Length: 267
Image 1 (cartoon, rainbow, N blue to C red):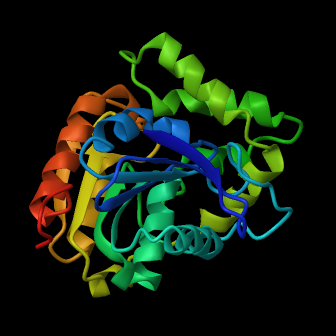
Image 2 (tube, helix red, strand yellow):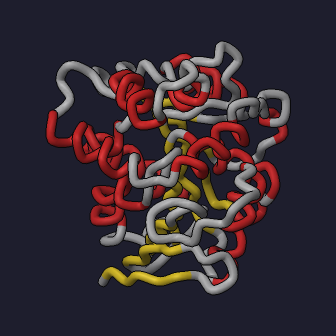
């Protein structure tokens, strides 16, 4: 059974499905929980799934300020504790993976595991598409800059209907929210902090991702002690949408290895 709710304190909308040990899915920049639709359906059969819309996204409230990664992680902390989710496996895609890293560093005892999908610990070469959008030439509108750069999220084999769906969903995010988030995470660099992380971690990289190149995933897997790395061939940034079976298989195997499926005894 799938239920929808809104957290009173944070104003965050969320989807909750299934029962058992919890998995929390965090979407990326200018996205929403629907980007996890394939994972919600698959995982809810074997565990409890929580998928929130981050502040300013989807059906959540739109505060005027405070879009720092620490604030986003704090929102997730409030929601998950009020819903009794801990210990949970935290899964983050793209910017959501950056928020997940911040959460893991700030609240490691909450986590049974961590999954980082098509994300980075830092952007030293300033290649993230959202950063390029923020530095668009004067007079170029947000929408035109967004659409010009969005091609780097996909490959020539991406389904046109999916590309249009992604672009439509992302352009629903208020422009001021999108730009505040760019300011918040564009200079993130937690590379020196990750060596202290003591949480079982899986990193998933996409070999066709031009916006967050797979070497970012490789770096993460090397920086986090004991982390495992899986790469998916010939797919762009939205690997969970374009190759859901492979992502779901990787998630299921990781959860099973932790004893984090319904009916299992935690390891």
